[in-house]
Image (tube, rainbow, N blue to C red; front, side, top):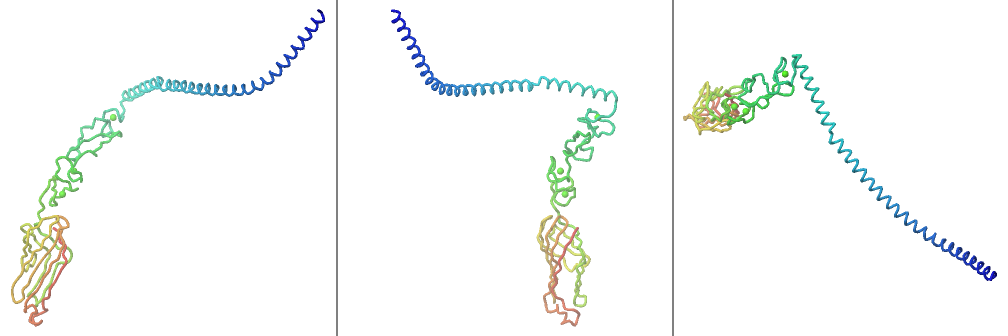
Amino acid sequence: MLRSRAALALALSIWTATALIACNGDDVGTVSATDSTSTSTSTSTSTTSDTSSSTGTSTTDASTGSASQGSTSGTSTSGTSETTGAPTSSTTDAVTSTGGPECGDGVVDPGEECDSADLGGATCTSLGFDGGELTCLDSCTLDSSACTACGDGQLDPGEACDDGNTDPGDGCDASCQIEACDPDGLYQVQGAPISYTCCNGLVTVNVNAFTLLNNGASITTTPSNPVPMSGAQTTCPDGDFANQGSIPGGCTESYAVTGSFSDANTWAGTYEIKFQGADCTCFNGQLGTPCVNQSFPVTAKR
Ligand SMILES: [Ca+2]
Ligand SMILES: [Ca+2]
Ligand SMILES: [Ca+2]
């Protein structure tokens, strides 16, 4: 029995050893399997760490956001501005109590043209403008840029026109109202006078000026005027005219002046004299230089 027990114990120990060896073998295999498992586990772990890290990041963001919100809510900021406001007013109080001039206190002090809404009684009209709104710059100087006036080139309320001047006679009068441009008047010839003579002085032309009458329908010349010239009425500042007249005879003299206005008081054109007839030769020169057609450029201003 002892042998059988001993044999049984031996057999049992052998089996246990075998089982242990078998277990170790299995463990080795399991270890390798465990290694791959642990690898995947570490992977999942790393995923988990990623998740946790991202979670951590969002958490950080959230905390950062709330932190920035906290600073943005700037209770301290509003508090600061309130705190800032107080010293400013106390500073103003200090200056006011000193009584010295200050631009921005709403009162016109010496050296200031105005201060805020206090314009010192000045208005656009008191400054010579026709109207508009006078304001005060931050520098306590008057700002008349919104004032209006006839002749400033801007069409303001009450103005029918504004040609940039207050000159009458150019279609827009001194009050910036539209006016009919009357071409009539005395226009001085610019430069040398127009002069011509032939037939020993039987024909003498000496023109220093033209006078337009009847809205330009009639034109005379001075000082010597062989004949008045007539034509259609014209207008200024941009009308044209073409007037003519003649003196019949053995040598018919025809005078014509054509021109166009470049502005209300200036026109330019041509003054022409034509001769037609046997006597224009002045008896073949026996009575002086024969008369021949003439054409003079003219610029005249009134
Ligand atoms: Ca002031
Ligand atoms: Ca104006
Ligand atoms: Ca004008």
